[in-house]
Image (tube, rainbow, N blue to C red; front, side, top):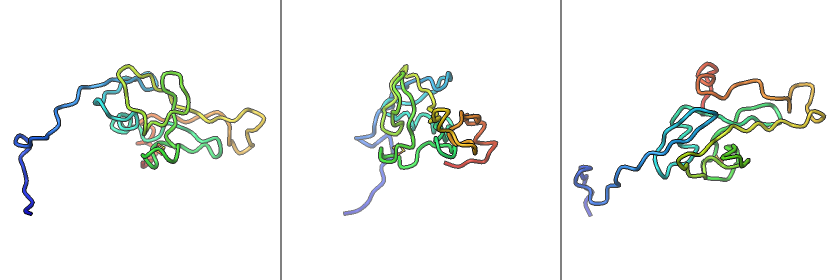
Length: 132
Ligand code: FES
């Protein structure tokens, strides 16, 4: 068997261009393509983290990308704890970041569990030099 390369225009099984979808993330409209996960749309827009852990106030986004770690949780259309890497983006979805703030009596003096004070915007990641 010989490997051969086909030009895209001659590929008989080449996928057709996918229709666009638009979701709203924290009030901002983001565009993706049909079939793309919410995490995919957000990563393409530069969002690397969208959740804050209760302990340590650490940023979280996609870690495993296959639905195992639950690091990518966010709120979609008012439903909490949706895994962004598993949920297909649908046109009109409203996505909100999730903050795992502990109740006041459980917050520790070092700030663990305290309300979030940092932004998860793509600009803040660039300023802080965060990676994926
Ligand atoms: S990134 Fe691990 S469950 Fe979504």
